[in-house]
Image 1 (cartoon, rainbow, N blue to C red):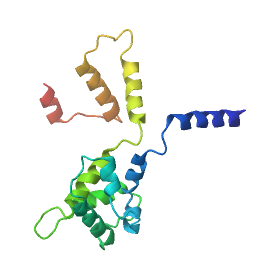
Image 2 (cartoon, rainbow, N blue to C red; image 1 turned 45 degrees about the vertical axis):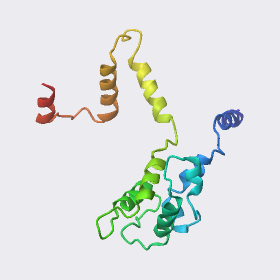
Image 3 (cartoon, rainbow, N blue to C red; image 1 turned 45 degrees about the horizontal axis):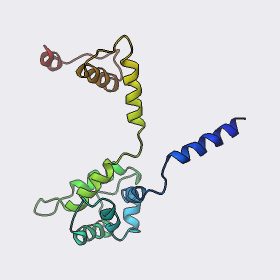
Image 4 (cartoon, one colour; image 1 turned 180 degrees about the vertical axis):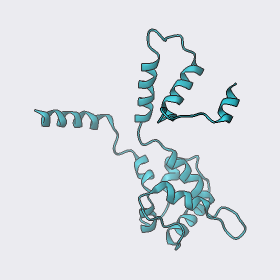
Amino acid sequence: MSRVLYRTCSRHKKKRFVFDDPVFECITISNPALVKLFNTKSLANILKRFPVFIENTQELDKEWRELALMELEPIEPSNTNDIREYWRKVFCLKNFLGEIYFPNILFVMRLILALSFSNASVERLFSDLKNIKTMHHNKLKTVLLVGILRTKHSVMDCIDFKPSATMVKSKT
């Protein structure tokens, strides 16, 4: 019985998602292991998918090749799956003049890493909003709702929470 239920649920989920969207191909280039393998020779496909990025494809591809072929001792993270740490280190690289080493890649990767891979957090927020704004609390102003939601999602351990003097001063 449960196996049939799982199969049915899986089929329904597959119908809702578009798995062949080219965005997924664009997102895979952010994986540090794939950068080093240099399977993606050019980022032109990304520029086609997101035309706002950069006009100079040659400069972007030149930086991409340099990044893939460069021996970067300080960049290699202990865990190659830690994408944020890898790209943070790449973004901090500077040349001898103190300029960012890969400005075009920096621009493209920041936008790609900002793409949402799921809407679960938004759905969770709407669920929390529905629980807060009930029939008895239907006249809450937006400022108060935002404050309640921020408090709910920011304060994890409120048993031992002690506001600092600065916090108290700023609100009094």
